Image (cartoon, rainbow over the protein chains, first blue to last red):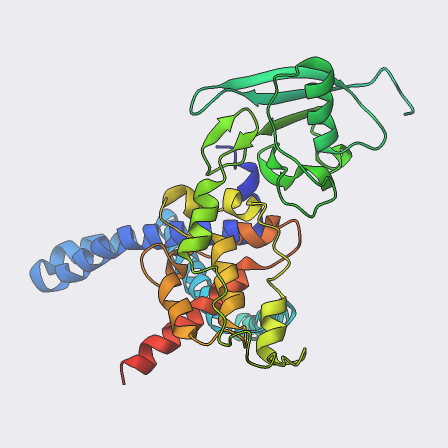
Length: 114
Length: 242
């Protein structure tokens, strides 16, 4: 699919990413709750299902899930900042950069600890 | 005019109302040439029946906006060199508006929404009162100043996907106008301004895609103006709930 020319800019892409991640999470949640409910109704089915979780493909899917959550979470924070903080664009860029820097440093620290 | 033999491949929308198709013209390339020059050349030298709209040619009147290679632009200030793709241009009427003929879009819905958004100045003083002093560095004035250079070209309106998806949505230009009024010290009834832009089709329909700000030829920021209206109407909602 070719992106239409008037949509080819970061804010529109951020909007679409936020929507798509939200949609994917909405599809995931009912499945998630269903699996959790197995703990009460059919524990042996749950155990069999959890056995699947060692599969590398599932690990990859888990990564995708965390990615979706992170994208959606930060997409929401971005919107809140955009709409509810009457800051100048420069101030917002600086704020975003400092948060990104903080995550980079703390993330590196965490990876070293692990 | 370094190379007289060079030609531009220009496809132009022809048709009335919903019907139409792109027609291709060969237009001589010039060193300095705006998209409006190209359209004018076609009308003057190739097909006099081509319909389009312009007036000032210097980016003040806001009447010559068209879709150029899929992006809304003021054609009089858009140099061909900047937007040419593989020697070709595609020029169409503004998006999100009905087409009258060829490149002339019907601007009525756009201006009707200015009126619906309360875009008329309702003064708080009569001519018998002394003129109200507004200090230039007053925060409200500073905020309003950011939006008053709008030339009503409808580029933001054509760029907005929310307008495309919701015909009732007032659109970035009308909402930005309301935001300048909301910040205008001379406007007494701020709540009336908010009320006319916070209902159905108002500022809360905006999805913050930011195409308005991205493409505004005067480098205004309707996205932030609409965010300002959202903040103001949210604040007024909680205040009224007390």
